[in-house]
Length: 207
Image (tube, rainbow, N blue to C red; front, side, top):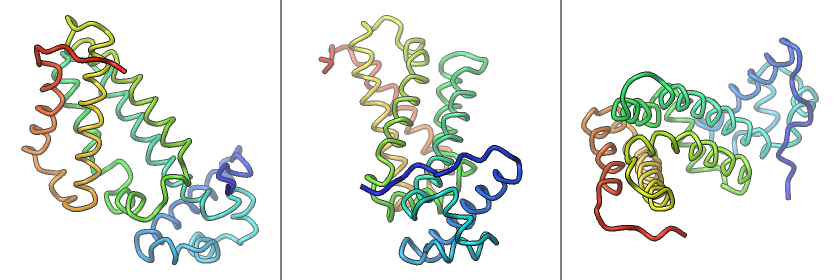
């Protein structure tokens, strides 16, 4: 299995700048040339660093892709946390969370689409699972506020349906109709997707 973790963690500002330049260049190449064209030599040339410098931080192309995805996911979690922990009622915070998930400013739609289309999930399986767990933990209090009368296990089961439904819809739109994510009515529909399982009277079976 290829090594995905960075070889070095950037500690100084100059090191962080190198990593940022590498990930910026790799993102541009992934969108413009595809995964095959995003070679380590091409990344280093566009980033303005030596290939040796690139390898000090990323052992291979797979690790670079994991770094691109990790940067997008980290921003998503941070923005989502601000939305669900913000002021206002549960409905307003839900709208804010949906706005984050559909946002054009969390990474770019082109980069997110390229990651979905071209990068095998196995290249960053651990990172994806960490992000999913972080998102689920962030959403727990929000769903409790949205459906306080549901038993915890029942609410968790319904939350999974709602969360995976919205996530799948966003990913499909990124792949096929990214411009739709900016349309206000699409966000209204996603809100309804979240609330539908929470408002059902029939109990679910967790597990």
